[in-house]
Structures are given as C-alpha cells and as structure tokens.
Image (tube, rainbow, N blue to C red; front, top):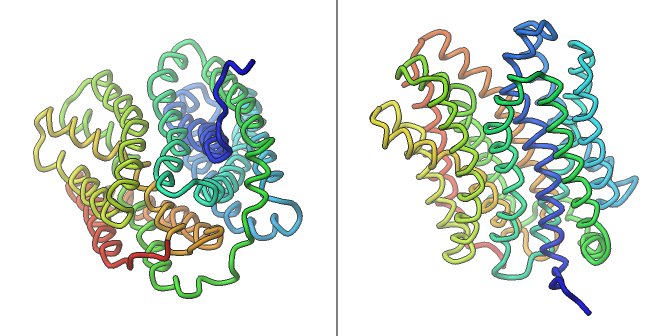
Amino acid sequence: MRILPTIPPWLRVAIGAQCGLLIGMGLGRFSYTPMVPALIASGNLSEAEAGYVGAINLGGYLLGGLSVPWLLRRADRVAWLRAAICVSVLCLLASIVPGGFLWLAFWRGLIGIAVAVIMILGISSVTATAPAGRTGLANAVAYTGVGLGILLSAAGLPWLLAIGEVWAWSTAAFIGLAALAIALWAWSGPAAEAARRIPAPPAGLGAARGDGLRLVVAQGLFAVGLVPHSIYWVDYLIRSLGWSAGAAGAQWVLFGAAAIAGTLVWGRIGDRIGFRPALVAVYLSLALGAVLPVLVTAAPAILASTLLVGAQPGLTAIIAGQAQKIMGPGSMLGLWRWMVLSVGAAQLVGGYALVALFNATGSYLAVFGVGGLAFAAGAVLVAGLKAGRA
C-alpha cells in the first residue's frame, strides 16, 4: 500500500538541486558573512585574512566553473553532483575546527569549487528534465535552496554566535548533513536516470549565439547589481539611517524570506507569461529596489527594497529557463556554464570596484545607483531577446 504520492523524476531532480544549493551556496557562502565579526574578534582571522578567505571562495567558484568540461570527460553529471554535495558538507564539517587562516581558506576555496559544479550541473539538469510549462516552477524549487540558506544564516547564526563559533559552524554542518541525505535520495533512482539521459550539449551556441551572449552579459550585470545590497545593506541602515543593529538585522532576515517566496512567485510568473517578459519585469523590479532606499528613506521604502531585491533568486530561475528555451531541446549546459562564470567574474571585479567607489566617495547613493543602473541595463538587454526555439 502506497502512503506517500509518487514524486515525478523532474521534481526529484529539482529537489536534489535545491538541497545542493542549500548546502553549497546557502550555507557554504552566506553563512560566512555573519560569522566574520566573530572570527575576527576571537583572533582566528585578522580583518585582512577574513577578506582574503572571501576572495578565495569566489576564486574557487570560478575554478569550479572552468573545470566542468574536464570533469564530464571523466564521469557523468550525477556522479559529480553527488561528489560535489558530499564535498560541500565535508567543508562545513571541517570549518568547525578553529585551524586559522590557511585551514579555513583551503576549505572555503574547496566549497567554492563544489558549489560551481552544483550550480552548473544541477540547474542544467533541472531545465532539461522539467516538462513544458513547469520549467519556471522547477527552477524556482531549486533556487529556494539559496533563499533558505540566507534565511537560516540571517535568523539563526547571530544567536548561535553569541553562544560560540563552534555552535554556529556545527549547526550549519548539521543542517548540511540533513540536506545531504535528501540530496542523495533525490539524485538516485528515476531522477538519476533521467539526468543521465540528458543529451550532451552542442560544441557551440550555434543559432543561439546572439541571444546566448545577451544572457551571459545580462547575468554579469545582475551580479554587479547585487553587490550593493550584499555588502552595504545592513551597514547603510545602521550607519546612514541610524537604525539599530537588531532592526537592520531583521531586514536581512526578511531579505532571506523574500528570497524563498520571491523565487517561487517569479518562477510561476515566468511559466504563465513567458520567460522573456518576466525577465524584463524582474530586472526592472530589481532596479527599483536598488535605488529606492537612497532616494526615499521612509520605512515602507526600506521594506520594499528589502523584498524586491531579496527576491533576486527568482531572476536566476527565469533566466535559466530562457537559456534552455533558446538552446532548444537537450541540455543548455554549455551556455549555462558561461552564464555562471559571468556571475563569478562580475562578483569578483564588481565587488572590488564598488568597494573602491565607496571608499573614494563615501556615497551610498553612488554605490546603490550603480547597482540600479546595472539592473536597468540588464532589462534593456533581455528585452531584445528573440522568442526562442521552444
């Protein structure tokens, strides 16, 4: 007698990607930011070393993206996805040990490599296996893993850090182990077979080259646009607007909640009205969210900015669906890999450039304005996309 409903393979693939992104991106990347002050205060890292560890993580992300073709020549995508998720959990466990700069830098670099593999192979598997009319939903399910990681990091880690760093790292690792169990189940049986049947990607972009290039550049602009909120949002609320640390931290919790809800909402919108118009709409909403808080400082405007920009994983869910659409039947892995690399490179370069801009001007308006312009430019780019092949 069957008690639980049968979960279709495409949804298991999406759940597997969701758990992988929760471990590698949500916990692996976003759990580090709230831990930095405690790591510096305890003497485990200096201020400069904390920055280097973050940069090494981003460098690992780029290295992981570049390595995917080499990896696929040696084993199939399911084997590498399982391996990358296991390595990510190992990195979380290793971070519990207070080994200092070199120890943490090694494991943060390794998890950066692993999350790029999860992002590229996982999302390309989701889009290739999702049925017609469900691509946006499938991608949204996968990307809620990122939002859940942000939410858990924002809501739980500050409280745990008050008890001790070991408690914070151990809790992240425990959640990672639970997600690993679900991920290994998801990437097995019918879902694994469906992923293995995905055709090899074409050698080039072919007829999709023009639209493919647009998406690669648009992804880079998206990454640049996110930098101001990623680095300066809480700082802006506290130092410029005079908010308390508790009130500013609550906005970051809402940011994580918006990442979950907004991803699902934008994914469904993409399925209903089409990916291209949905992409224009989400880029414009992000542009508004980026510049609104430095133009209008009232609490409703701050909340609107938190929710609009917090919903940003929804853009990635939609743009992945558009990438699959313009590539036609089969795998969008080749194009998606370049889009992921574009994000990594833009985060690295844009992050340093906007920090330098702020250090030179001391102006939040300048930094958030650049973010808004990047999102607006992305809207212009995607508005010129063709209808796609499917």
